[in-house]
Length: 166
Image (cartoon, rainbow, N blue to C red; front, top):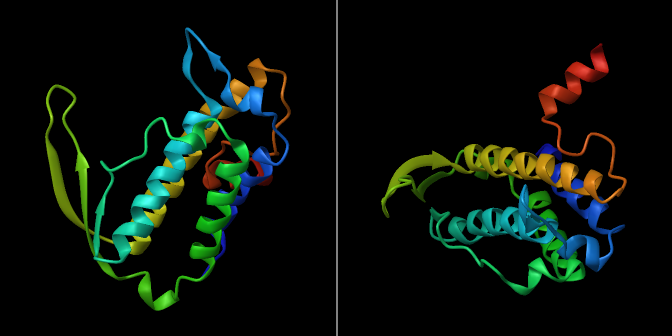
């Protein structure tokens, strides 16, 4: 299997290997009421939901660990990201077409979830794209703290391809 998905996790690992706990925990209101740690935890929650859901072929993205210690402790996030990377690197190629049911809340005005059919690969695309979206926000938060970031952090793969070909 391609290492594309683990490379996206590597971006977060590289960022967290060079971040202080205070920068990781800092909230930057009014534009960023959540910390970098909260965004990383959110990314980890989605990957974790995928991993946990693969055991019974049902992913529930509504089950998350909001406000967990992982938001405060970059070393804990690093450990969890390393676990996710190992899982990604060990997915047999034949499992990518594995059918899955996916549940997610879809209504902004009331509690309402839907369940639909998907595959492991489609959900890998989703959680990876979702991570990149949060990385883009983290990139801005790092800039506001004068923190350097890895090259291409927060860019979609197609954007990176376009930049490199220009």
